[in-house]
Image: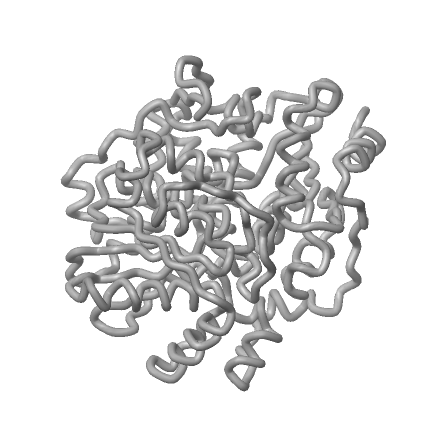
Length: 434
């Protein structure tokens, strides 16, 4: 498998280099040289395969022999060892529950797969690998769980102080061992900017082996494509299927585009955002205008300059008209999000988290003018991770799974730092060299 940079399609690297490096030197993003359609027979017979079998066959198709089949099967089966059930709301609306992994968020699929893939590629290297990751909420917990106590790998998680939920913060600040949390006095976009700058800093990269676990790393996106096939499989009579994706950094939607290019018959994608609506605005106007992120109750989507937009542009030939034909954009305020949460509970007796509620509002609005569609909402996190807001809006608290409840009162361990790249760089050089 060969990959190029979104900023240079003439130079290619192998998969192992792309995964371990994270970002190309030109600050683009790695993309597969090509994405071939899967055999039609496989798509037509998805119901004959388990989720793990589907994941393995999709990955095997993408990797095209780069990893021996037995090794690849071990990686996939070990990473994708929990379900992604489809819940029917009505004949038009379904919810794909992506929160049944260790950290109760969809990021578990990417983090667990990436941890095993990196360990496989890095097993012959004696030099420590340092993973940098910025999080707006769920990525940090999933990466912390996925890489916890992985030999030869240390993880540094940057998160915006005061802008993630309590339980999200507990997930990334209570493990210790090889996991360090940096609490940044800024926004997610600030955290992400510092991570990107670190990869371009020759002084830093000559002293520390760095890579990323954000969705800027191609290893995060590949496994996120698996559950689009799994969702389609679970539809009784799939017809005019659309996927509605609550979106922040747009890795999840990009993974869906990968699935579509591999032949999964998806009629339309819906990009559902909160007030941080730079992509829906682009789809409407043709102008991409990133801006500082705004804080909302759907905090994992508080992204004002989504990294994966570059991959979306690449997939559509950097042509606005092409992208807007396949992706519809909608955005909602906190008040509208809360209304969606209440409506889902009242109409369907289902407790949906704030991010999923944004998706519900978008799907409902889209289907008002497209009633002949079947829509799948990606429910990206368990509602208990946003306990105060869910309880305030719905009047009662969802049951908190045991693995989340047991960390609620653990001692938080984080390093508070300024929103200053030079301070961040000094911290890395002082703690991760030698």
